Image (tube, rainbow, N blue to C red; front, top):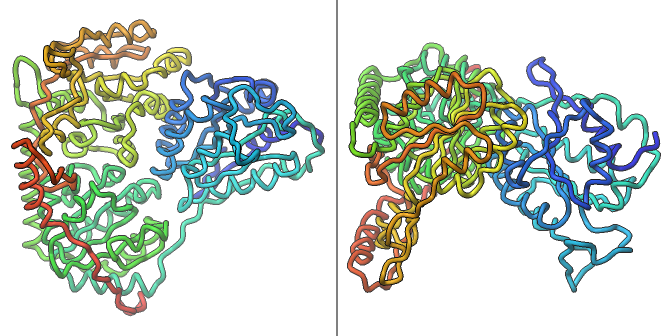
Length: 630
C-alpha cells in the first residue's frame, strides 16, 4: 500500500488493540498536538485525512499535552494511551518534562516530534540546534534519557520495525513509559510501498506473570512465622486490578496494609486492615506498625524515598523484606527477596496457601486501634475552624465531603500531595490521582483534563496551589474548547509554601519562597503581590467562584458540581497551619559550614535525626518450599 510515512504511522496506530483478562479495547484514543513546520505537512495531513479514525486534539502547551496523556493513561490503568505530536525545536524540547513524568511513573505515552531534514538539504533548518561534532544529533536527543524507547526514522522502510518496538514497550507493564519516534520532516511526507500486513488489526496481550510456586510457598512460610507482618501496597496493585484480591486476602488473614502515593486506594480508607499512608507523608498508624514490623511485603512499589522515609521507616533489626513486582528492577530494592510476578496473580496464589492462617489477634486489635486514632486526627484536621484564613486540611476536608465515592482528586506538587496522602479518605481504587514520582509542578490541570476524558462519568477535582497554577494553566482553554468539565480548587498561599516550610526546617528561613515585593533591604519580603489568579482563570474562559472561608467553599463546591462547564474555585489559606505530623523523617541535608544560628541549629537536628537511617544491606532469603507443601 503506497502511503506517506505519516499516513502509514497513523493508520498503524489506529488498528492497535490490547487485551487483558479476556477484555479487548483499542489502545490509542487519538493524538494531542501543536503544529509547526516540522509536522504540519506530514503528520498534520495524515491526521486530517484520518478523521474520526484517529481523533486529533489541539493542545496549548507541549509539556501539558503529555501531562494530559499521562492522566488519561493512568486513569485507564495503562490499557489506553494517547500519541503527542510537535514540531522540531522548542515544541520538541517542551516534551522532555512530560516524558520524564510518564517514564518515572511508568505510564505509556507515544511522542512524535518532528526532526531535522534527513536529506540535510535545508540545514540548518529553522529551530535546529547545530552540533559541530555530528550531523546525526538534534534537540530530540534530549528525549533519549527520559524515554523507555527512542528511535529516529531516517528512511521510510525503518518505520515498521520501529512501530512494533514502540508497541512492545508501551504495552509491557514492566517496561512502559514514554516512547519517542523522532520524525524528520521530509521523511514524514515521503511515500513508500508499505506491506498490507502492517495495517492488519493487531492485539497486544498484557501479560500477567504468575509467581514461582516455590517462592509463594516460601513466602507463606515466612508469614506463618511472622508476628508483625505488613503489606505495602504500591501503584502496581491498582494497575494490575488487584484491589479485590488484596481485599480478600487481608480480610481473611488480617495482615495490615499501608499505602504508597501511587497505591493509595488499594483498600478503602475504612477497611479494617487499612493503616493509611506510609512514610514521610504517611499516617502515624502505618509508620508505627512499619517501625516494628518483622516481615514487610512490598507489592507493586518502587520504594521511593518518601515511602521509606529515606530508608528509616523499618527499624526492626530483624525485619525481612519481600518484593512482589512485575518489574525485576524493583524487586531487589532494600535488599528484599525478589518475586517477579503480577500483583493480582501473586496475591491469589498466596491466598490459596494461607486460607487457614490469621495474624495474632492482639496484633490485629493493636493495628485497628492505631488506625482508629489516626482517623480521629484526620477528622480533627478537617474541622479546625481556623480564622481568619482556613488551613489547607480544612479545604481538603470540604472537597472530600463534596465528592462522591467514585469521584477523583488530582494533585501533583507542593504541600498538597503530602497532605492528601495523609488525609484524603479514598473510597475507590481510581479516586486518588496524585503524581508524586516526579512531583511535577503544572501537572494538575492538564492531567485533570486527561482523567476526565478517561472517566467522563466521574467528577474530577483538581487541587492546585498558586505556584503550580502559575507554572502551567493553559489546558483550561483546551477543556473549555472540548466541552470537558473539571472542578479546579485553586489554593492561594502566596508562594512556594511547601518549600518554604522545608526551607525553614533546614535553617534557610523561607528564603526566596514567597510571592512578595522587595523590601528596603532588597529581599523578597515586602508586601504581597497583587496577583489575581481567579481573574486570570476567568480570562481563559472558566467559570470562576471565590470563597472567603470554608462555609463559602462548601457552597461553591456544590455550585461547581451542578455546573456543566469547567469551574475554578479560588480560596486563600494560611500556610502556617500544618497537617498532622507523620512521625517519620525525610533526608534533606543541611549546610555543614554556616554562620546563621538557625542553620546551625538545623544542622544539629539533622545530625541527630539521620541516625535513624538504615542501609538495608541484610539480604532476605525466601525458604525454598513448594506451594503445595507450604
